[in-house]
Length: 78
Image (cartoon, rainbow, N blue to C red; front, side, top):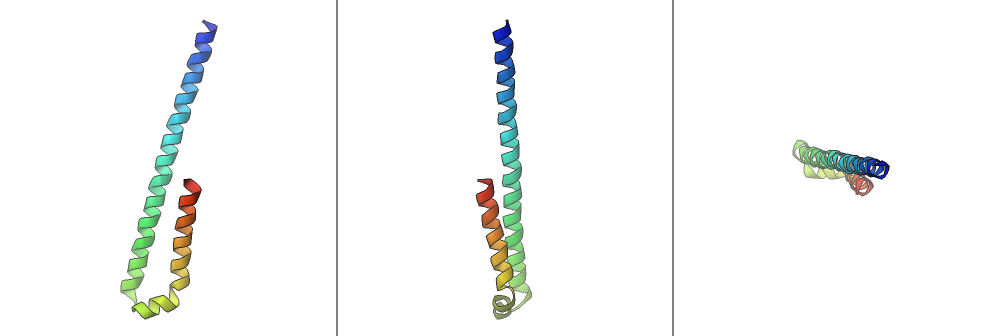
């Protein structure tokens, strides 16, 4: 009886860990995809809002920072 109880508790613990793992991963994946979509959207917005040359001169750093951040996010969560 005692062994059975311990086993069921362990089983429950494993299930809950597994569940948490999946849910957390799903949330982070959702967040990452949202971030990437948003950064791509802002990137295209900048292209359409100003001339290409202006964009290259004035927003180069900003674009670089956005994409570096996305890459870091992905490597952090994978």
